[in-house]
Length: 142
Image 1: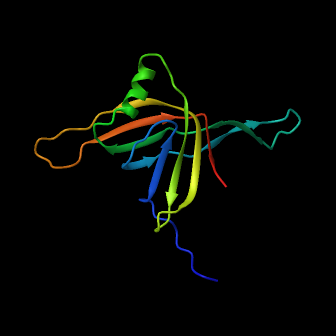
Image 2: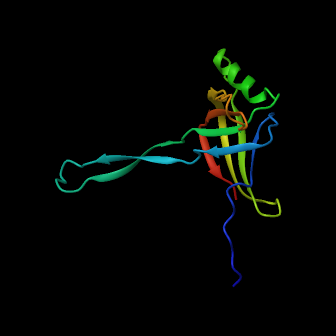
Image 3: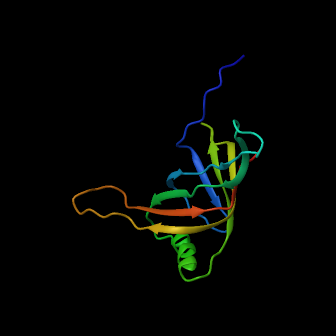
């Protein structure tokens, strides 16, 4: 059986409906969790049943080098102004040849937070913008 190496975490793409943004520096926080609801039946004094509760999805954090592009900022600004624009998107892992290998799709997402870059006149780092996206569902595609 041939050896299968894991995919590297620096080869990824983020697609969001209608938004073209290249060069994401970091994408984190995507996943899911199921709340555990404890329940004890009246006649059972020793055992607590564990039932499935609500499913929740953490916020997705995206960071990228600041450019002239305003698409992600404008999407957030629309939410600030009271016009929440829900969009679907994908986070895609690529192999060493640039081929898509793993995809997570998120649904009904909108940007809940924007953070402008920290500036330092003594440094020479790239200015990093960040946005936090909340979504209602996330699933790993086949």
